[in-house]
Length: 307
Image (tube, rainbow, N blue to C red; front, top):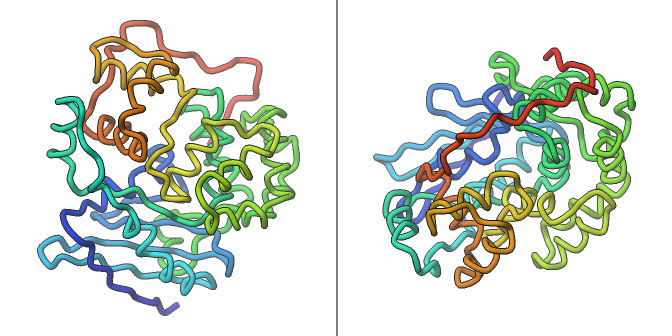
């Protein structure tokens, strides 16, 4: 199967790894692979499944993207936005020394815009209220069961394309339960699937309207909409309020103690327009509060995930 090719030349310092790493949901994510420095993404585009391979040539100042499958042309047209070409970090003025150091250490970070709203939204719903280990296992099982092997060479590296936006609605309830996803979360995915067309349109809306459209769905709150906007909408100003770890880690980095969500909201207010960018920079710089307590345990009332 022949590939289509597109060359993108980022402006200024640029890091492909820092920009795309937010799309990887665990080391075993079947929709995202990193092989010999190249990022491989399985995408459920409006035109059909696509395999997208992206490799940076730093010395030449270019990024080469190749795509296969029915959605290849759509995927390549979206590459500049995916790589953060619309993102402008220049307005971020550091108000904490730790933020200034993180900016200097990671000047190549860009906030991506995949335009694949439902693909990111479903992944965020699966990650609601559970540990990362459980969520990543659930996603692997459902995607491998109901997605499709990625076109072209994606198949050889075990890459999968997740179900198309409307196809999430055909996953039976017992399959969700078998993957460790209880009815509250699977029900939210079903509601998302029923209005998939309107949700995909959110990529063309102003960010406040896009958030309102996502949050009009029962089960999609501030955290879920933010996690989606960070990846699908290029939203540099939606930090992960409501996350089990983020406020605590941000507080530890900025003030030497864990924050509540309200405290993080207040402390990040001077960074309006770049609040998620600050969160991401601190993550990339490795700022985590010390983990002295017991680890969160997976629930025992759900079937064990085997894949």
